[in-house]
Length: 277
Image 1: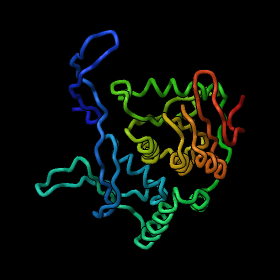
Image 2: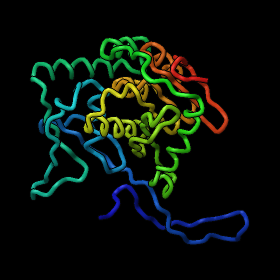
Image 3: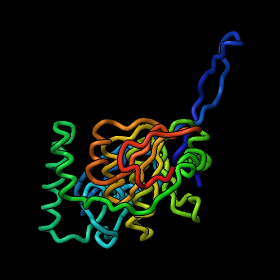
Image 4: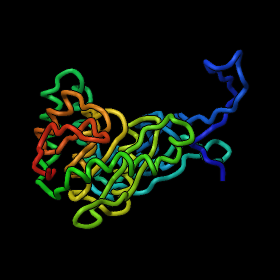
């Protein structure tokens, strides 16, 4: 079966040590739209790397508060065209949520979305009303945190081929001193990679993830902290920096935020009690 996440394309390559261009075939990460429908009605559209679409939708709906458990996810159906053929970039989801409750969730979450980026305090207060502050949960040694980028990078198969994808990885305790990789998902969008990883955990019945660590490539944004907290992930780490609003939200809802996780160290911005020096 063809890998829908990559595509080959001709290009030309130039190097300082050579004259002229050489023809090459480059492998690119695929970016295509995914239309998510609720009960047959268009709900949202996201640009993503094809694959794990059910996980992406499940993680997105959980993070945004439209579902609270796997039991509310219901059926995920393919959308067909006029000839009865499945559309590759559309899925339809039937939620097991009473109509009145769904209307209230839609109204509440569209209100929250419209406030994001306008007033950080309003956004944080809205999320606090929906997500319980995280308890301390599991603790991990600092040396364990340092291992995460290497473990994540080893599992990034599509990135190794294309160099063009973000990743989100969930790690769970392996023994008293270490962790094991539970799931890794890649996508052109860092938020989608997080939704796919959380969606996988939701479908597999792993939630709450109160003993897990999430590691992401790139920077830590407000939205990624929100998505991790919705799944009760107590420690969120990244190879790059957090934004100011990400730190504020993590501080308020009890998430340990570690940034610049590199070969020799990292910064802890909030709730350092979960990391043992």
